[in-house]
Image (tube, rainbow, N blue to C red; front, side, top):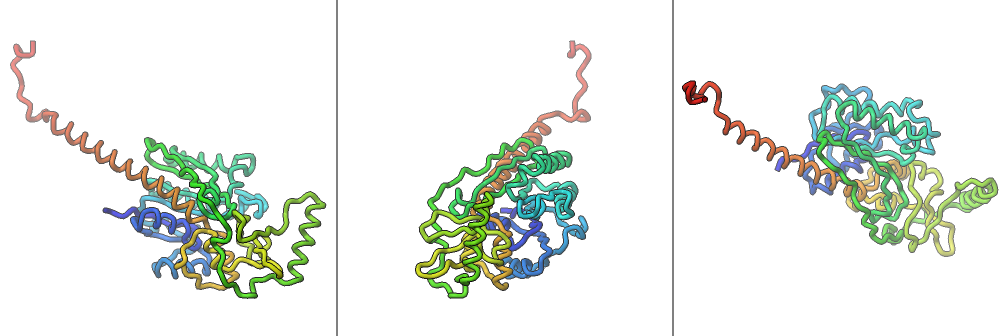
Length: 345
């Protein structure tokens, strides 16, 4: 069977691609990758091979982008997230969406998947998302759906919510987002059995976390550290800033200060397999997994997308065969015999 060709934009460490590969059982071929961060590129190549990874998408010519069936893009979160000051399209990084648009407009792939923070839905009273949807419709993708999905509803012990935007060229496709699996989750399932003491936070840092939480509570702010045990159902969302102090996810330890997740535990929290290589420093690993996607959620979205594309292709084949049969049944005008005038009366 012919492989489905995808391109991987704002690829990070390849979480979206990985979800599609797992869902398709290696039935996809990634023909183009773009990622500007050199450390993410190092991790990407360590896991997906040494094919060229293009850098800054704003400098990529359309002629360098090959034809493909599905465009994948986890475009930058910062402009739309609470942590990014909600700058949206006023921030230059917010315009990177329009590089996705120019590729879609020129290459017209059959489908696309875009991923972003859930705050995109309400940013600027919904106008930012409306702008994105409208621009997609103007270039031929009127069949667009979006939904916020939560990682812990798909078997990952993390309360990570992200918005997924799916579009198809074929207007006949009726796409449904995957139904949550609601598999039981437990933080202990992703924890390593033996952890180096270096992941235990210092007395000073622990005291600082507790002080800030008390102060924020008095001020009516909801910010503070999050602590879980091995029996907790899920953690807070891991972010790219986790490397700084680990405050959003601390693991309780008996008779000791809590500890941070290890990079391998961070990988598991996002659904990356055990054989996923981590060739970078802990600081970079935390940034990368904090910026990545919950692979299990991507896998389920990919299943639905690939199913609809397969059904669409089958319908297209049936439609073409029907046209061919109709064409064969029509007598070409040049070969038709002229009937006597009396025979037409």
